[in-house]
Image (cartoon, rainbow, N blue to C red):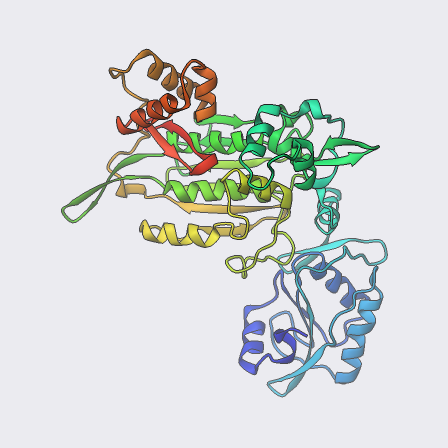
Length: 467
């Protein structure tokens, strides 16, 4: 039994009752039938777990059970009605206000998908409800050891991978010298053997595919900037397509180009700032892309910018045993291969997804911490903007005309058209230049204040500073 059962003190139980029923807490009358109790246990097990209090009114008032032993046995019997049987730690009895309550805990991160008489239930708020077909599919995949990302991408072949991107990725990995690119991708879950031949998995197509949207239509990011605090007919929109690394770069470039810049005035001190800390925006976008549920069709990652906030939405609720309460301390990856690939490319740390860094960076910038919210089928992060603290109320203008040579002009034009530029893209644009000349060209544009360097190591790219 978890601490919520065995070691829960009276004050904590009273706090649980005072907070009332919710997604992780259900109150049932003492005479609840095993079938009703089983329905609630299934709903909690298929969501994020929680506590059932038998012998409490909906208001949280203790009513009590007549026979504690019978109540404990009722919980055990209810678990056996479930398919597969829901084998929980024994329920416990707790005395509150002279009443005996029976508490049953469903741990988070249960290993199976559970049903009652063929019905698959989940829990939203304080209500048990039937899971939709899409939610059930996503849940089955999330609790399958292989997961959606490791499945062969339907209809995909090796020719659908961008070999230049694959070769650059393999060349940057330590410990793979002498290994063929197919072996490396097989080891990292980006290829899988099918009929004796290697074929791309969904992870491989998403990370290195030439046109991933051929196989997953909604594997993209919708980017929108509204001028006010709500949605309206006046907006700027862009869709970030292609492989995930490019999507992330396009999304960051869009946000940087459309966020306000100005002076934050504190006393007699003026500091040049942006509407949102760029590092926080980057973490939020990378997390949304890395941890979204790609089995969900008909929905994509959305980045919505308003005059007072930014919302980053990702399809799929929190995975495994992660909940809103333990989000800062627990780690569970729905897409291990995708996270590993993005980590190898320098976008995300393997064992720390940056949530704690986001909170710290927002506070250091004098802004409220990010707000995290689970919706019925997704997860949303809301970042509060600086609002009136910025002198400049509008996004900064595009890069101004300056005295730059032809090669720099081509680099700036490419960046303006595509939203960002990498060393590799500039080498392809200017093939006659050496790697050192490319490096100096980009460094000079950064020194002039025309380009902004984003990221580190292999994930480095450049965007227009005044885009």
